[in-house]
Every structure is written in structure tokens, then in C-alpha cells.
Length: 97
Ligand code: FES
Image (cartoon, rainbow, N blue to C red; front, side):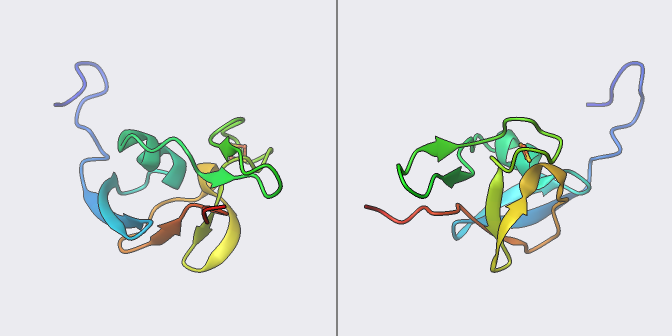
């Protein structure tokens, strides 16, 4: 639905991102973190030593709480990285203990 004041939704075009091996839709131009929230995913990584879940904290690229493994590269700040069709996104330090 178009916004009554802002008009046509410019984010209408969608791409497909892969999150931990599963496909999810994402608006082209959105950040990875926003796209994950759109799909109900709130955990981006687990802490190394205590294995505690972390998600978006600052949302502006300053805290690194939102880092994930993107296309094989760890520590990508997902709150400031835009999605791309076919992007492979993995929860960082997800391995079971
Ligand atoms: S949420 Fe702080 S760097 Fe992304």
C-alpha cells in the first residue's frame, strides 16, 4: 500500500536473501538488519565466550552487535550493509555448544 503522504513505496522491488540456508524476501535497498527484522529474525550473532545472543543495538554502525557472516566474510555490520539478491547471510558463532 502506498503511503498517504509520501506516495508510492519506492522499496517495492524485492530480492531474495539466504539466511542460514533459508530464503527470505527483502526490499531492495534495505539493510540486512532491517530485512531480518522484517522477517522476524532478531538474533544476528552469539558472543564468543558465553554464547549469548546479540541483535541490533546502535543501528548506526558503531557497536558491532549486529555483525554476521556475509558471503563468507565474518564481522560484517549488518545495520549499515544493504542487501543484494542471493546474498548468503549466516548467524555468527551459531555453532551449538
Ligand atoms: S547495531 Fe551497532 S553496529 Fe550495527
